[in-house]
Image (cartoon, rainbow, N blue to C red; front, top):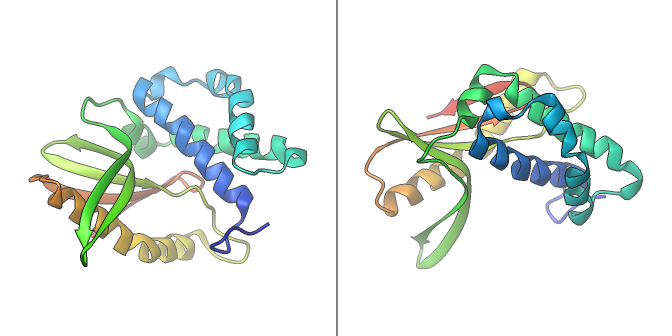
Length: 181
C-alpha cells in the first residue's frame, strides 16, 4: 500500500508511532525506559499504528518494529545522548518562516540547546533496502534531507535564535548519527 508520496503506509505508521514514543522517552530520559517498560507500551503502540493505517493483520510486526527502533536508540551512545532530558528540549515543535511571500510551517522532530548550540535532530526510522549498503543508504538519505534540515535552521534563525545551530539525522535502525553541514 503506497501513500501519496509513493512510500509504504506501514513504514509511515511505524515512523509516526516511533516519534510519539520517543517523545515520551525524551521527556522522562532514557534511564526510565527499560525494555520491560517499552514492551508494556505494546497496546498503545498497536493503537497508534492502527489509527495511522497499519494493517490489523500485521499489527504484531509493526509493534515489534517500533519496539526494536526504540530499544536500538536506547542501546546506542548517541541515541542516549539525544534522548536525555533537557529543559530546553522540544519535540515536534512547529516553526514558521516567510518564504517567497508564503508562510511555511515545519515541525522539528527534536531540538535542544547544549553548550551554547541549538541542535536540530531529525529521526529517520527507515532502513537500508535490500541490495543497498548501509553506508550508501545513509549517504543517500543525508543528501535527500540536507535541504530540509537547512530550512529548519533558517527558520530557527528567522525566529530569533542567535546561537550556533547544528543539524543531525539519527537512524535508529542502523545506530548511525550524522551531523549535517
